[in-house]
Each structure stands twice: as structure tokens, then as C-alpha cells.
Length: 116
Image (cartoon, rainbow, N blue to C red; front, side):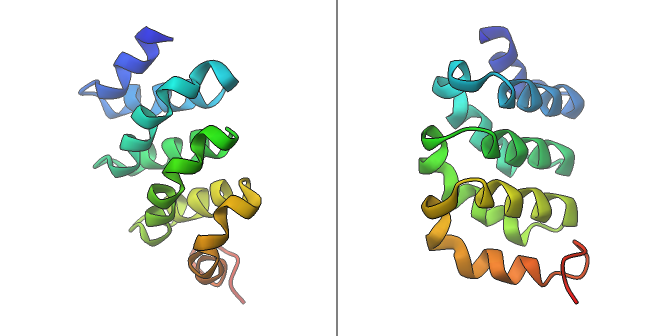
């Protein structure tokens, strides 16, 4: 996985996006690299942020230290990133309770399609 992790810092946003996606599918083996994925939540390209949210939503307790960073994405300019952050937090159940108010606000976001 070292080569995939190294690509998280690639100058090409599509490569960073793909690297996040790949790490999201590697289960426990990706655990030591989740902090690097979490840094991509602050990428300047929204598809990378979306992929980072999705990847972090696919892992268990190892992600919990980064849930606050995922919650920041609930106010992202891109509705796709907001939706991915909402789903990622939802995948973490009780660990995401501190972010419940922000998730509830996201659920009423008409751009995401959850709002009335």
C-alpha cells in the first residue's frame, strides 16, 4: 500500500482521488494510513474530498479520531462532498453523535436531495 499512500500527495487531483478510493477498499490494511486520507478532506479539489469522505466512511474505529474532520465537510461548498460526509458519519453510528446536529442540518439540505 505504500505506493498508493505516496500517491495521496500527487500533483494530479485524479490520482489523489483514486488513491483515496483504493485505500477505502483495503480494510484493516489501510488503518495505518487513514491519517493521510483524512488530510485529503482539505484538498482544493472537491472530488478528492468526496473520495476521502467515502474512504473514511468504509473503515471502523480507526477512523474515529478523524470524524471531526469529516464533520467539517458537512459545510463544504460541494453538495456531493456534504452528502459523502453525511453518509460517512452515518456509517460510524454512536461515534458520530457529537456531530449529530450538523448531520441533521445536512439532511435538510435541498441540494443533497434529502430536504423537503
